[in-house]
Image (tube, rainbow, N blue to C red):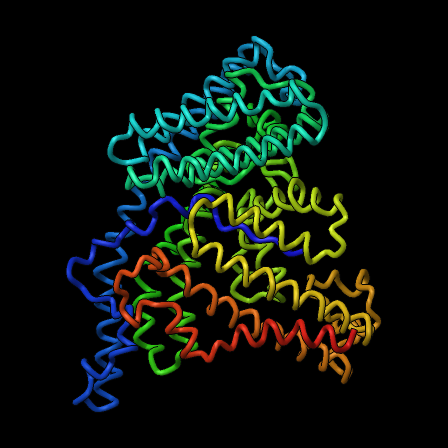
Length: 530
């Protein structure tokens, strides 16, 4: 199925890293639109040399300051996660807690209470150290909002079954809009706090459904609730984890050498992503100025790299805390990078939009699939499309009043579902491996015309490969086309002036709205041949 959820840490102002480090250096972000102002009198060879020379200068002036600022920002977060993990391990050794970990039935016991206290304390200190100015006021506001969430959670005591969980979900999403109306206009820092609050809301909704279904047998006490909401591994950047997985990982038992290896690899990828986001993507816009698609792709690359930066940093915090994710193995030593929040290789070269959105934020996909999509499917909406669309609507609303997200997710839901339906029908009609999902291999693929099974000498194998390649290129075009929307901080619907080169509508019109034609065309083709 198709789900998408833009990274819950994205509202945190990670773009500030390196943003001012270059002084008055012009990164040429929009140089492709007025290129003649710079090079109108230069020859083609001189122009290419000047662009390359400027690219090198920009990278030298941007990369080093950006990496230093990121290191300064990340160091206390990693230190607090490691300290919290060590304190929990020492306490567990002292009290001789079982190696299997803490069970859900014992989560509220007095023996386990210090573990929750350690998690809550280190998490709140982490937020206090990283939220910038007016830190105490911001943390206090988050605690007030969390207290209101705990009061809403008591609805489970009043009602029974999924009625209570649904009420909690509606109240949680509705209250976030009230927070927006009451706080957003008065506080310029609310977008930063919104990212943290969104993670809390997702945990609250999942906890409500788990309590209603009996997966969590007892209502968490106030200390266990705070420990879950403000665990240092997930409180600042996410991702979402279930209450059951949090309790299982209260005492991490992984090997420290494996933790160090995974931590170093994630941090290297994190630094690479921020260098691409703040420096390389902007500079490459000059080289791609002759092709509008390449210009859109390189500018949207900055948005995607920012997401990778947040995701790799979140993975580093998970590894340092010894926290695993839902849907993955409970063993901390598995995998080269540890728990995966994103899969950039399946985003930059996707088999389909469905694979792309699932790989964008893996924990959010699990959350949406289990708690939102599954609920809509149970209500028999008549067609999978409507359940998918409702899932995208819920994921959009959780971001608050962000029209950019609404716009991107609306079209992404339509385009992805149209492609999935078309490819599913083509795969069934031709008995070929053309479905939107990843091929399961020659031994498990249900299609007789699987390229991996047919080999490299079969004409059908080459035809299927070519068809899948075309769908991959279309998904990459959608990625650049829709990603350009997120470059603007707002959609500027209030009438404020916006430069032509800064408007995503300008990019869409230059591309002839081709992505819309392709997306809706796929749906019409599916209706025609089905």
